[in-house]
Length: 255
Image (cartoon, rainbow, N blue to C red; front, top):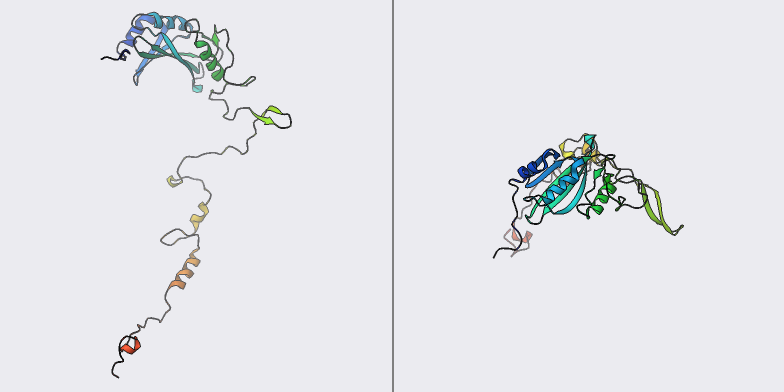
């Protein structure tokens, strides 16, 4: 008996169909690691999404997620907004990418998928990307009065303020971040691979060592210890027994 769910559709022919439907709105496409990614023009996003939803053979009815990506090295249009779509009838997924910056707004798709309202708010909160047409574009994850956008690559890891409960004020207060210690400079190069710095304890490596387990003793101390353990000079005579009386075993022997 076949499963009631539709079989998963391969990517064969998807890009060709999308290219014919979107035309110039499709900047470029990519089929890699089993996923299809479509990079489209930002200004025609709403029309593109409508065609992807309503065109027979595509039918991506559901918006699963909206994600943001920051590429600071790009300079212009450093942000990407990624839309993850699912076709329920074909059991197939694609990603739609648009590029923008922190000034040019991305058209909202809340008119197609109302769930995009909260998803667009998350991208705005984390990256500062604006969405034109979103009637409630405000922060959703950070606190009131939060400064900056935490998912940007240039946002400090410690943030700018910290909050704690003040026993004096009997309320939660905000204060500038105070680090208990300075940031450490981590170098993941193994010291056995030729690191050019001195680690704590490396000064012991300058002490000469004998064969065997490492020891913190100096060379002179090692020589004295070896001398104390060596047998006394001249004590090489072997003691023997001439008769049984000397050993205490048996009767006395003849003289």
